[in-house]
Amino acid sequence: MPRARMGFVSLALLLALFGRSVAQEAPAPAEETSKSEAKAKSGTMKKAPRRARREAPGTYMGRRIADVMSYEGAEWLIRASREEEEQPEAMLDALKIAPGSTVADVGAGVGYTSLRMARRVGPEGLVLATDIQPQMLQMLVSNARTAGVENIRPIRGTATDPKLPEGKVDLILMVDVYHECTHPEETLQGLHKALKPGGRLVLVEFRGEDPNVPIKPEHKMTFAQVRREIEPQGFTFKEKFDFLPWQHIIVFEKPADPPAGATKAASAETKEEE
Image (cartoon, rainbow, N blue to C red; front, side):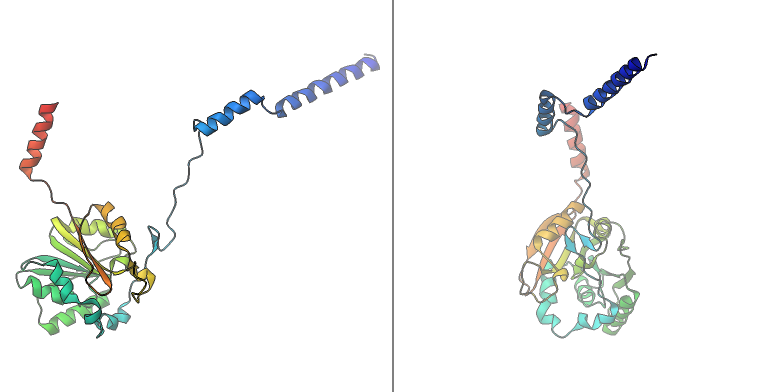
């Protein structure tokens, strides 16, 4: 083949390849671009899924989980000023605990509240006193023995399971404890199982709304935060008391099961409507 012709063919081949490359890199026509923008604005184009937000370690629903109070600081639980600051008898008066009840003091510590509850339920009643620290329970047993109280049963719980008997408890009380639970959902599920239908869960927490309460922020909770955490676990808010100097008393209820007759009647009505 003559050199002139070979050069012409090479030039033609280069132009063809160059043209194809330009066509691939060229922007889409204006009409197609406007269609893509319209789809994006209308939401018809698929978007990359957002990643679910994860809680930072040591937090739950936006709050910091407080450190568990060690048994080495147990003296603080029986400090002389506690009677005036927390008014435990007035708090228990508001709960109207019936004699003969089975109640639980979760996070009982050395038994400061358990002993008072034991007197209220009487010899026919029972106090289930739970704690995750065996040293606390040892001190509780010693204090109960000294006080001559025999209707308290100590229970070693865990961070995820309060170890309470299922469906046997009339009232569960947590005094300055819930905000320290490292696994709030698992703990609440265990408490829910332990309550009888219509049983009550009571949280006593330092008021997070009040900057004048002289407690570290992580050891306080607002009423709104308590409801936000407790209600999704199957509890119904019942009432709140705010007469204590520094604390909320917040009462929740495990909904009572509907009577068997009512359930059957509702099923019959549904079938008739169908």
